[in-house]
Image (cartoon, rainbow, N blue to C red; front, side, top):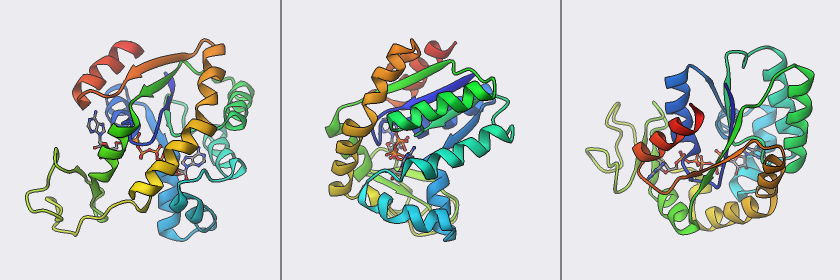
Amino acid sequence: MNLVFLGPPGSGKGTQAVRLAEKLGLVHLSTGDVLRDAVKKGTPLGLEADGYMKRGELVPDALIVGLIESRITNGDLSRGFILDGFPRTVPQAESLKGMLDKNGVTLDTVICFKIADGEVVKRLSGRWFCPKCNAGYNYPAQMPKTEGVCDNDGASLQRRPDDEESVVRNRLEVYKKQTQPIVDFYRAESLLTELEAQKSPDEVFESLLSQVS
Ligand code: AP5
């Protein structure tokens, strides 16, 4: 099964992709995670992407398309995949179609997560993570035992720089301008399924499972 998860920042794409990939044995490819890792390691990709990400803008299409193309052509995704955060622009969606056609791969469904802006701001202003083990927390629903400290290894929790409210608001604007148009692209291809994402993680997962099975 080959899926694309599409939706505003904070709509739960990453949370649900991890669960679904584990349940169905799929590869979860998050372009945001790949870019953050590149920034952390200071690679040329990371150095180029860093400023765009801090401002809540999209990194240039060419950087992202090259990254996905190498993963498709080297067979990395052959047991089925969830693309989380890609494509995000019409040119990226067109490039993906070309890459998949060229490699004889079919996309099964594009899941579009639906959520209100206010809920996004609330979720992202409460998001914390451990820089050592990557465990995620969300205040006040998922608090660590000691505020600001990871339950697993005692490291100090951090926030993503792009979760600062003004940057989140810019990410929402960028989503509406640059990413929303691909909803129509996939609707026209009869691949689009909408998912109500403003429910508890378990409820969203139940709906997701029923949509992909
Ligand atoms: P990326 O990392 O993809 O960010 P995003 O799409 O903005 O997604 P988030 O990770 O913020 O949210 P999510 O929907 O995955 O939600 P999550 O499950 O984490 O991209 C970051 C940046 O990289 C971009 O701004 C851009 O610069 C660049 N980039 C990436 N891909 C690109 C591309 N293709 N082209 C160009 N640039 C690109 O959940 C969020 C929080 O809410 C968590 O704390 C979670 O615990 C909580 N939560 C989840 N579900 C629920 C629920 N049901 N109820 C309550 N809380 C919940």
